[in-house]
Length: 534
Image 1 (cartoon, rainbow, N blue to C red):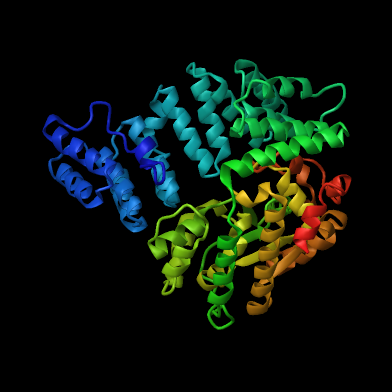
Image 2 (image 1 turned 90 degrees about the vertical axis):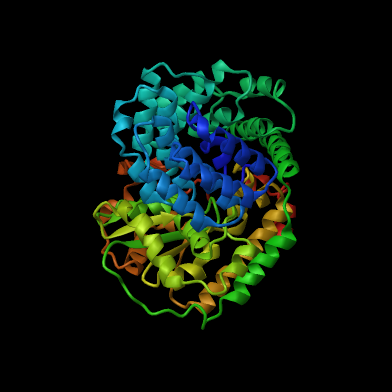
């Protein structure tokens, strides 16, 4: 069972396993889990705790069993107990921190990362695990520092260099990131993600590109794998930079076909979810008392992926009273906690069914408890998770004082930008033009619904206006948030805060208009998308 990755990666016992008196119960618990006998597994694990074996591995396993049965709250309780039981076992510290982060216990995970054993350890692999936890929390400077400690202790390899290069890029060290990605690719026969990242770092030229290298790797990669898709997306990016558009389109089609075959997409289920959101939130159900509790205020940035949300966050993050926090999963995770229903999707039909009697004030308090530390003493902090547009009704009920900015971009531009991005399994709709058009129609329908039921609660920020007349757009959005205009907001090149999105290299450049109408060079090939949007 790998319901949330806890069993396979985090619930392993300590090196020696439970004490001899508990070995029988441990074996029984694992056997019950293998057969999905959750009650029996829980009884065996409870008995293990009573036998005074080392608690942390048992509590991690109990948390996984709780998630398998859907109970987020029980899992959180077990993990909090594990955090309180930590000694100086660096592996256990990493596993507990990672598990807490994945269920939305951000503050407790952060507390684990302050354990003094982390500063003392010489365990390079444990440092790498902890670096990944820091990365998941959006603390990229700390993640990079631990990775460089691990490198100093001798940890190396293609995987390590790939993730090290990503952290260099996220932290703005672009030239070093490019060199590290090159060295990663030199170490292994296939590493598509590295090639794609390298292609995106800068605009490729006739004198300096990786087309021949990518084609050689495509000849060796496992066909139909995500690695295969990544090389095709990389080839598309480089050929597009070189103006070889017919070849670039063919590569893009092949990459999307690989991902479409791997993931699939169910438009009928998607439509049912949007229908439920529209019917479940009317003007009366989302009405809430406007209250501003003491403390930092969240600003949510929502919209389609690749709509310019990262640029908007950079502009806001330049303000002296705003802290950019990045793409936070805290609201959807706290929504899952409030509904006490485990799941991987941002929102699904079972979750919507479980939210019929949700305690919205509790949801709001839980969210603020997990996120306000990110404000770093400032009055506002930005929570930029684009698909939170689906949760605007929940956000408004739970946090009526929060600001919500909706990034709007031309439908053809934003859909084409989605089609040429490799999101892994995050957005299955993005790998098919008809599915993209369908998703965008549902998105527009829902946003129109939020504007009707929540008049004035959401400000649309037009991407075209933001890049053409940035000062005017910035004054408008800052005023909506209750912030005075500051000229420094327009200087995205001077913003040194980390960025961990696909735009991490581009948003460090001056604001430009080059992305407007990018789809036009593929106008003929994109006619199916135009029809799907209509």
